[in-house]
Amino acid sequence: MFFSLSSIGGRLIRILPLVAVFTLGACTTTDVRTTAFTPLTVEDATIPEGRLLDVGVVQFNPGLDTAEVDEDQLVFPELRRAESRYVAVTLADSLQSSQGWGAVRVIPSERTNIDVTVTGRIVQSDGETLTMDITVTDSRGQRWFTRQYTEQASHYAYDSKHPTKGDAFQGIYNRVANDMLVYRRKLSDQYIAELRSISELKFAQSFAPEAFDRYLSKTEDGLYQLNALPAEDDPMLQRVRRIRERDYLFVDTLQGYYGTFVKSMETPYQEWRAMSYEEVQQMQELKRKARNHTIMGVAAIVGGIAAAGAGAGSARAAGQVGIAGGGYLIKSGFDRRSEAKMHIEALQELGDSMQAEVEPRIVELEDRTVTLTGSVENQYRQWRELLKEIYEAETGNLEEQI
Image (cartoon, rainbow, N blue to C red):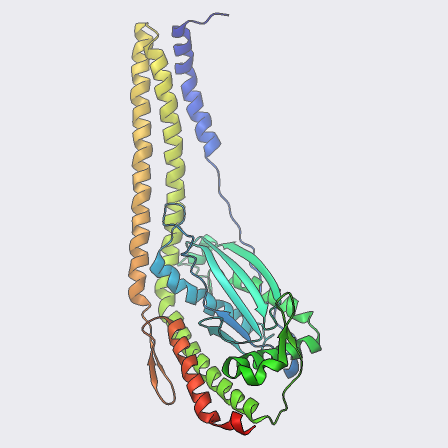
């Protein structure tokens, strides 16, 4: 069968409007999202003291090691570092509210020997979506679970006319807390008692390994095993317990710092989230329109070239119109991408401005003032070194006398 070039051009000219319509129809979608809120599970009975486990939520990894600053992953280092504290405090508040644990503290690092440790990494956070990797491990070294949690905020979360109480992503913190509670309920009284003893002895080992090493051993798979317990009246154990109480005092002081930090950050951070949510929504819409216009423009140009080469005057004229129209659509697509880039730059400015809102605070201790102007982890490291000095000074020649 033979087709002339002019007939092909004519058919393309007639088909292109339909292509445009179907292209728009295929790419235009109604994006309806509903977020099922997960309520927090609260213990309905008082837990015996012997079954209470202390929890340490480590300041989250901001995820800057693998994240890239691009148009799809909106990552601002200053903001992410602030978020790493914010999400840790919010999760700790949820755990405490569940009434299923002993003391729940946000801790600067995993150096603290505590019954249950929660570590996390922010994978995505842009006001619309929050994704986190969570790992829960106990002092024995047993990993409870490693899971990724993700949640999308409803636009109602940022509706100024009908503001939502609490954090826009409170459901994700509730899910983590609920999963931890489910796991803890399966543990036997003996296992929990051993965890509490292992936590104390690991702390003691960090100060006097030669005196406490014999009480703990490690299995082939790296889990701590309790061999024996020191006598309750052991003088070195008594000193370690006093040192541990001082460590708790310092960490409890940090809770005030974290709380103040989050409170001062909360208003501008929620405003950033709301603006970021709008920017992300608009940027996605602009990208969709830019993609549609570019596809339509290329199709129009191809059809126009075919029509212009057909030879007939009317077909040639129509082809020129098709080429011009296609060029306009492609330019429109590029213009929209430029507009999307402007939104990205607006987000960058918002992220940079957050830095001024999250300056560290001064922590007042009983015998000194610690200025947390740098890394909290560094301050805590210095504190642990100081505790060793206090322990050695209090112990004196006690080890030689025993």
